[in-house]
Image 1: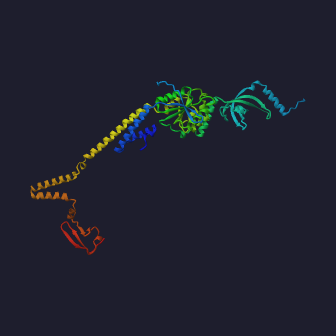
Image 2: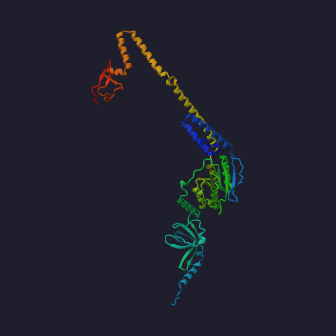
Image 3: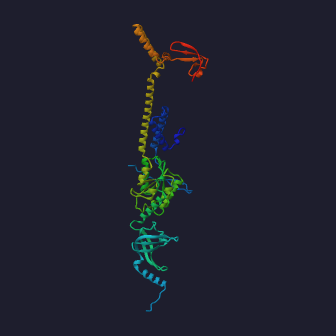
Amino acid sequence: MAGKKKETQTFEQQITRLEEIVAQMEKGDAELADSLALFDEGTSLIASCGKLLDEAEQKVVQLMKGADGAPVEMPFDTEDETDG
Amino acid sequence: MDQPIYQVSQVNEYVKALLDGEPILQDILVRGELSNYKVYPSGHHYFTLKDRDSALRCVMFRSQAQRLRFRPENGMKAIARGRISVFPRDGAYQLYCSGLSPDGVGDLAVAFEQLKEKLFEEGLFDEAHKKPLPRYPRTIAIVTSSAGAAVHDMIRILRRRFPAAAVVLLPVRVQGTEAPAEIAGAIRYANRWNVGDLIITGRGGGSMEDLWAFNDERVARAIFDSDLPVISAVGHEPDVTISDFVADVRASTPSNAAEIAVPDQMGLLRWLRGAEDRIAQAEETKLQSCRRRLQTLAEKRVMKDQLAFVQDRRMLLTHLHQRLGDLSSRGVGEKRREFSALAASLDAMSPLKVLSRGYAVARNEQGIIKSYQNAPAGSRIEVTLGEGTLDCTVEKGRP
């Protein structure tokens, strides 16, 4: 994980890493310096995952087959009702 | 009697004409058990309908056989429709079958069971082929009709639960003769262009006929061949289709598929907050335990004061001095004995003590002699006794 920027990680990778960190820290057998580093990494993962969820807006398209066979994205009208 | 003599063909033609003139035999339904069922390369089907006591030969020509919606099998109870006529070449009458359907259950039900069994035998339903769903999909491909409630239900639930996942709709017809090819094609297309992390395919509720596309072998095989995990979501809860068996996950309804496909964002946010508390707690515990360990170490006298050991010894010494001082101020005889006892305890482990019990130590220039081999004959050695020393010459060594 070291050296890999978290921007390049998918949400799934970030959550998975976070789960590892929580488990490892709760086991409590890491060296103090390591556990501080884990704590920092964990906190920043939580912040970035939380931000992604808070700011997420659903994107919906429908795909049509283009002339060359490749998919072409077209808008798709969703029912803009609010959820009950 | 001058009876006329007929040709064989004349007889057969006569009987044929008789039967063909009988209205009841022109369109008749016959119930029986299929046996000796044969499909000829010509495409015509030949079989026998039997009951306990009797048999009836039947033929179904290619054009009718092609319309069969199930695969007739020997032993199957069936109802055949057709007309009875004579096949003049053999002089045998038979049922010219225009339709055949399973007795007791509908032909769709039989077709369903047959395809299910066939694909099961081929291993298309094996758990080993089931792919896990991504826990947090980035893009969800939906293969269904763009009309109808199902697609909107799914999009709404996906938005409510996990808006971070994008939705890509591949619109297809979900009923009618074109539907199976379109659904199968869209599933393959989604794989070919890798348009999502998983596929949901299905439709809202309807009759068995309406849902039939999802019992089509082409759709089943497209789902099986999909590298992207597939959730099958057809009809209502009790509806089960072949797609459900082949798919990696079966959802009871399209809405249920949307719930399965993504995690609930509220739960996820709660978990994130929990994780924050948990790692903070773990870090606090860690720090506390480090602090405690440090303190315990600090409280050990060796660590507190490197001279502690020496001090302990010094205190013992002072104590002994005091005792000695006490002794000098008491009666000499008693005190000497006390002193001897005290001294004995002090030198209990001293080599001198050992010597005083009658042992001796032999030395030469190399040091203490532990083996006769280190003291050759004629060499000089020094022997220390409990009291005094002897200078000796070795006469002879023995092992």
